[in-house]
Length: 572
Image (cartoon, rainbow, N blue to C red; front, side, top):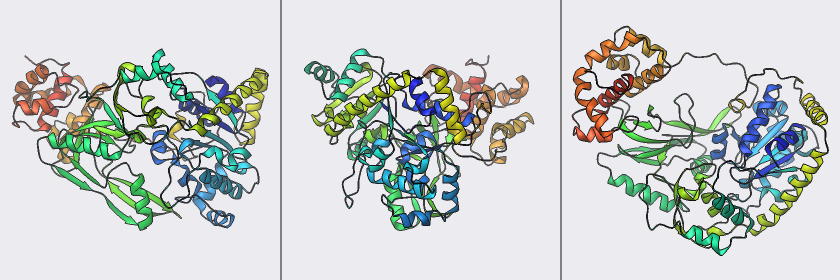
């Protein structure tokens, strides 16, 4: 099924299971549907089965949204108690469309509980209380996990509520990630359980004993990831700085949160460490999964200063993770939103698209691990395998059987849709929007970034860019150091403000002459070395080492920025 057809089915208000191979456009289709809903005044609830997936879409976990928290099972009486929570009750009143991403990792028991909560709080015996349910994901991805003290987890398609919802299956068939025909054929065969000897031989041709390329490295086990990251950190010169997670609140909730938090309880860093952000912060310009390098530690706060791939400098302060109940936090974790990132687990890579990766599947232990890891990479040329065992090339037999049913159901849905005229499709969409209390005509015709807002909210006052105050002080003749002190910011942050203002052409031509002149003793010796070592736009460790610590990283950042302002040319 193509994305346009799936979108038409979604617009009709049908309950939908949206699936397809990695790179088939599931996320894009959901974004387009959310834009459609938002443009007509309908606010969908965007949720995901895991915290990692929720941060990718800027939504909530289904556990938090539904009010279930860490529970997988709930009684009707407990559902009625949830209705006394004004925040949860208000959320359900406003919701006509519920989207759950990464459905493969949601236990069937949890889906049934969400169904029951929806029925009770919407006061309706219809499946999911009459809310349109849109389940998104691929069961060939990683399966749901369970704790040792719980019954074995079951796939969501085994839930009673799955059948009750009468889901229309939209199996997307287009491919937008991999363009390598041979690699596509191997992934398709792996997905269908029909790998040939030639396919396996081709994968073995990508085997490498070791790999020192500066690319992402994926492993099946946390122990391997921790070992690689620890070894790489040990090779770096300089002093270590360690940051320990703090916690407060309900002890059981704290332990549950620690298991799901991507930041470690104890994080040790050095200058030169490769790190990955573990949460979103649009204001500071990073998202979960952003890669950066530690280039300094702030003199006052002692927090790490990192340089991102785009050259942006960020002084990373601790973040907070919390579980709320009745409008108050029940448990809180505080830690830097970072983790070492020379290596990561296959589990953490789900949802990523990589130009290249070194992948060790020699100890793969679960169905789907190999498929998830291999399908992160865009081509065979970017794939380097450190190990490959038999389990890594297997998919769950139960999923394999169910997948054939999904494909057949999707073909039947395509046939039904093909028999509808364009006017019938439009009328169906209009009727659904009307039933949701939306507007027949778009409220605004410009493109809406729908994933930035998932629930009705009051318009926020637009704040001035952070660089505005910084630039005003510079224009008044103050030095960068003076501005940093006046604004209680690091010099790296102030340089970042100026770089952003310069990129937007907001700095008057003559504004920087006093800076250039006052900094000549700094820029004259540093600029030629930056050019010689070709470090512009990259980290400054080679320049720092060249001068053997004579200049601080703050000095180097200022010099690099002034060189960028000058178009990469040294003043004569």
